[in-house]
Image (cartoon, rainbow over all chains, first blue to last red; front, side):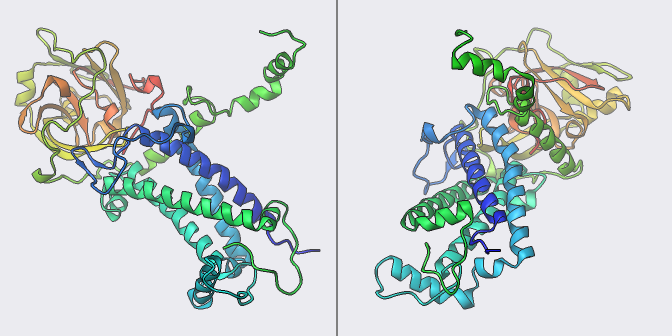
Length: 223
Length: 236
């Protein structure tokens, strides 16, 4: 039997996560619209440039505040559940070894990949397995961002019952800012990710149909 | 309705057939957030919130320096204007109690006074801080002698149609009070004078303003915002 590049568990959780991320981001932005500022009343954060600016209408899901809150808190469970399935698969299968970032093994390769992609370094990259160093770094960082989105979300959902978690973020309004900044970072990741996939369409086919591993080493993929 | 032979008509009939009704039971309709999958998950989330709720966990009491600057504390309306208390206003405490009470403003002032200075969390996302003076709801429950069957508390306003209902544990929390003072002054009408509910453990929309009636109940009722689609439990 051929070994797929992307096993079924990875493909399913990847695309389910894509849909859930859209729902969480869209409903989150509709919630933000009810108070499109950061910082407590009377003490807005000076660094935030969009005080009073509602998010773009086309990006919002949920219709109104209560609708969006129901979407957000309903689909948050599915978002967490899907992430648990993925992480469980990563560790149960041992796939984490070739998918997650290991500083000693991947740091130099990540740097070389970055220079290569920015056209600052000529010549081929040193050979690598399933992912290059930059991919491992990105896919590991985005997992951490996902975890932070849940933790900062819980901190603003339950600032009294989980007051230790809210305090860890620097308080309620700081946690709310963290929650929005995580969304910005996830959106930035997604844009770069889609650009890289467009440059390497084979990865899209693999992530959808599975693909099959070529015997010795594969040409470089997206970072 | 278009002609039954059109595609739309066919689809309409197909959607109303039994098989798809089961699916639509899990639909997500933003205008009806208490139904379908969204409604199911509100009940799941209520269980989650009740499991998280600790009756003795207090919100941090904040220093005076944390108070929101004067004029920056938001005030909200239900009707067209901030309602004035009717002549001879009094608080009625009833329901499943041994001793129903009628308390005037002066009676309330004579009861043990509690000050709560905690962060206020609005459903819209903003937070603000004020110091609220008043009587614990648990003190009124004690004075009235509530029945063991009481599981919910309903608070009604003299603003018509404005009310909310709370789970017993949140209502009897030590930081849940009926407030008649704000930041050391008598409560302003904009913030719910002569009496409003204030609590550290719920979102702002659960805190009924212009209160005139407290009823201890064995069953749950709704609320002004809750009946419009906002979540019922709304703990923080």
